[in-house]
Length: 154
Image: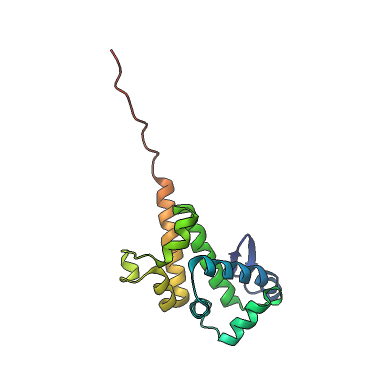
């Protein structure tokens, strides 16, 4: 059993019924994410696993009846998780811009996170997701800043 989160629902990727049930909402969320990130259709198709232009057009034309492959749902789940982690770390505005910003982390090899994900496929999506989860967990473990202490008067 392979369970992933797609939005707020858990999906068993080995269950065709689960995949069919989750596909419309997943596709709609993916389209909104691409709009927020400024990702054109050609790059969106690459993020989904290099699907054909005709198939992508068909899916986008009628997302309510779309049934996505488990591999596509897994990629969408990963991308939505990336956006969620970015939102928790930096807020929604930066979450929308971060993938196109220069990044000095060695994983990106002097390319933007979006370029890295486009070149690296599913493994790159998971690498970015893990990086952001680790950053968020590290930020949550930071002790709160000390209040400005006033010296005792005396």
